[in-house]
Image 1: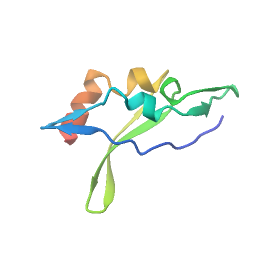
Image 2 (image 1 turned 90 degrees about the horizontal axis):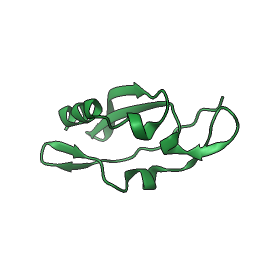
Image 3 (image 1 turned 45 degrees about the vertical axis):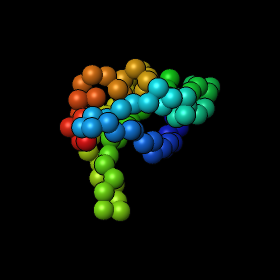
Image 4 (image 1 turned 90 degrees about the vertical axis):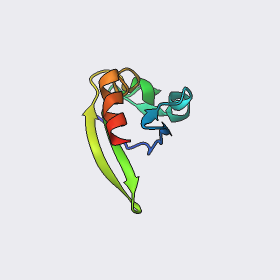
Length: 88
């Protein structure tokens, strides 16, 4: 199994809400090897992700999640959007 880090990826802010731009996955997608040795896009991969806030010259982790199947279908569910809005 191979592990790699990607990002950080910034989200936009509108008032008191986080906005996931429509182009988010197209800009974040990179070819990543899966545990079977083939490649697939980052949005289709699984793994861990961190929501963090940048402040005071550093970055503070706020929420850590783990996907079971795909980042694209699991990172920004309504529950996760609520967490993002709490951060904002």
